[in-house]
Length: 415
Image 1 (cartoon, rainbow, N blue to C red):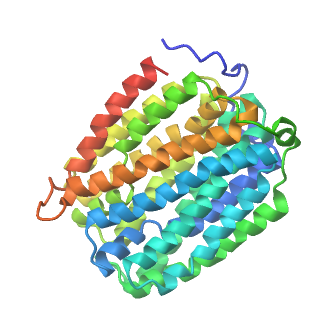
Image 2 (cartoon, rainbow, N blue to C red):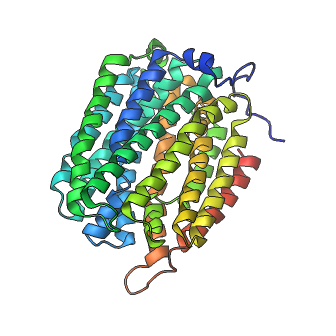
């Protein structure tokens, strides 16, 4: 049985995911969760339609789609490290969070005029730059706003709100697509731009919520570094980053799941319905999973989630019907619930308070930088490059399942 790392907080009498425990969370956690809800309403109206726009309207191959997604995530990743360290030095997280969400909102109109893939890349670059600016300071602010024994619950609530926003956003997109093109197999340009226009409202409301309801925590200012390099993050955290990089190398963009659903015969409306099912599963399980991680070794939940991930990827490799893909999406939501918020709580456990912004920045940067080779590799494995036609749709999913097994062993035995 693995033992918790020496720096982990005690786990006594916590983990109650009920109403009383949720009410004990401070306003910052609720406000940041609401902001993430609204932002994901806007984001999820578009993010899964983007690969369909690139493939169906612009006619791009999967390797180019993977390159666009990977380059965008790389921009976000490089920004996350600097933004997290800057928030440590300033002792102020809110301004960076507001700026990041605001930049993503300003990027949306680019999709209304995009007529080629460079226009989509420009949107993705500015959108991901905004994400890079906001993510590490926001996660550090959540950590500083709540007691150590409630971290899992706080991040669980935040991830549940995030995925609930995604669920609502997908339902709105589904209705808009159905009203515009009904059950067409391929996405058309008019439908896509109508969804973009509707996404502007929740994107702007996100910024309003942050400005009005979120405040900085004085503890950040008291512990910031005035001079010199940031404090070391420790061997357990560095090992955790290495394991996460290995796992992420096989965790290609979810755009490939959308494209895989189309190869099984799913229409655009069906794809959006499947994604809604994924987010419903994620929303229902994220809070209880985060609360449970306050009582258990968080690595156990991450390993359980990775086991589900490997099964899902194996399923995507061999699925032949739409209903099989739909069922896999529901299980995929459970994987996210067991790993996303819990993984962030583990980052907070393994790092000192004075360098928490830098730690979250390094965590997100490591994952994001690996997204570029992961997505490009997935595209090459699927459709090849140049004259080579690749190994087919199953290849990137088999590769991802195999790497998950290796990463799981290292997390259990090494971190």
